[in-house]
Image (cartoon, rainbow, N blue to C red; front, side, top):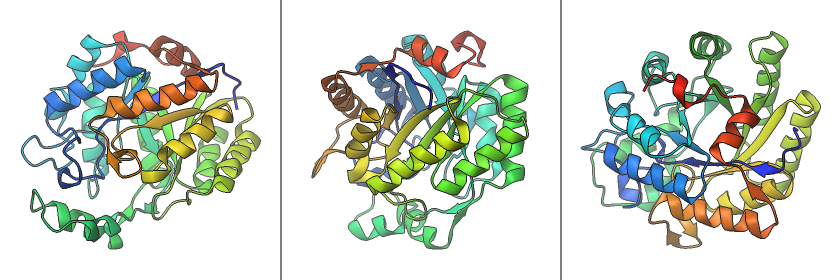
Length: 311
């Protein structure tokens, strides 16, 4: 792992997993997404990771026109790195998932490094009164869902976004095998350092949220990539702050946000994304560590800069 003195805080603002019934704090409309993104940046997030939602129903949408209602506003209002999903929402085709990134040509995109079972169906048992009809089946049907990211899919994203537009990637690794998939593309010369690796823990279908797994993921990445990568960590739900704190202590960066957890502390829903950013920033600084500014994150990750995007 590259030895950096600064901790990059990423904030995943809305995602495509949680549904509006689960929290009133979850941003849905372009205005809500923009305002919460800007506030998260002001609280200390160097990278803002973004999905879009139907403004009426809150259902994840791949529509570039919806993205373009908040991407320019975020760029104009703060200097955070804008990171656009290529994962989209459940059941989207690869063409749909790429629609907005290919228009936006952002500095960074997320890229999931393998196909996997992605089970969020247990969450449906916690609610009975739903705000929208789509929510319950969206969750429950994930007991029969594979999030597809084949080697061909990954290569297409690397070429169509990376080579064509200079976009770099947040390589989302939900299991140890995903690190080896990334190493495969490095060996083929399709991915150049520095790599931004996001190790993800606690998703049903991926590696579990055990601290032994955190250390194992770090050691495996060190073995495969040496000093050529910047390591970041996120964990789902109640594991979020524990894992981020441990990652920072191990020299890594961190990701928080309402995509990953709806809570600020045990039993307390976060009102917004900025609350989570402020909390992890406070923890990081209490550990005598410094957070990276957006421009420092750009240098660490060799990004092309906000002037070279499509919005």
